[in-house]
Length: 375
Image (cartoon, rainbow, N blue to C red):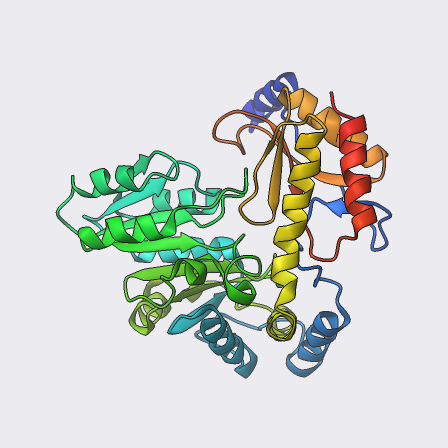
C-alpha cells in the first residue's frame, strides 16, 4: 500500500511518546504565554500591527513574485538598510523566513571543495543548510573554539564555521569571539544565526555579534529572524556587501522564492523603530529570564542559567515533559516542550521564553504553576 510505512512510523512515535499535534490558539487566549518567541512583547503592539496594516494597504496582501521579479518593494529595501545599520553590518538581504535565510547563507558560502565546521548544538535550519551545501561538514563539540580550530587545521581549501549565537534548546550563548579568532587563524569565514540574540543581546538589542565586537567584520556573516524579537515574520542575512551580492545571484531560497509579504516588512520596520526608541526592552527581557531562572532553581527545579531570554527546565522523560506541559496549560500557563529529536542530547525539557512585558505577578504565577505541576 502506498505510504504504508507512515503507519509504522506513527506507531513508533506513539510508543515513544513523541507524537506532535497542532493546537490552534484563539486570538484572545487566556493563557499566560511563556511558549512563544515574542521576546519584546511587540507582536501585538499597536505600532507594529498598524505598520503591518499600512504596508498591506499600500503594497497589497502579498509580494506578488520573487524578489528578482516583482517581489522587491521600496519597503523591502528600506528594511534592509535599517537592519544593516541597526545591527552594525554593511548590507542586508531579506528572505521570506529565517529558515530560508540560513539555508541561503550556508549553501552559498560553502561551495564544492570547502569545509563546514558546525557546532553540535546548531538549529535544524543550519543543519539542513550543511546537508544541502556542496562542501564537507564536520560537526564539532558544542561551544568549543579549540574544536573549531582543530577541524579547520585538517583542511587547506575554503572553509566556514557555522553556529547559533544563542542556542534555542538551553539558551546558552556561543563563544563568538573565540570562534572568530579560530576562523581568522585559518582564513575561514564565520556564519552565525542570531535568531535568539537580536533584540536581547548587545547595546539596545543590536544582537550577539554586536555584543562580541565582530559585527561588520569582512569575514563574518549573520542571519536573523524577524519573527522573534521584532514580532513579525521573515528573515535576513547580514554581512559584507559583496557577500550579499553573491547571495542575490546564487541563493536558491532567494531567487526562486516569493518575496516577504509587505505586511511583514512593515511590521518589522515598525518594531525596529520601537526598539531604537525604547532600548530598555532588550535589558528587560534578559532580566526576566534571569529572574525566572533564579526562582525556579530556588524551588528545587533543574533549570539552565540563561544567557539571553530562553530558560530551559529539565524533565524526567519525553512522556513526563509532555504531561508537565499539558498540566501547565490546564493551569493557564503555556510553555514549550522540547523532546527528541528536537534536543540533540536526548534530554527532554520545558522551554520558557522570557518576555520584556511580563509583570512581577506573571513571573510569580509562572514559577508557581511550574513548581506545582512538576512530575
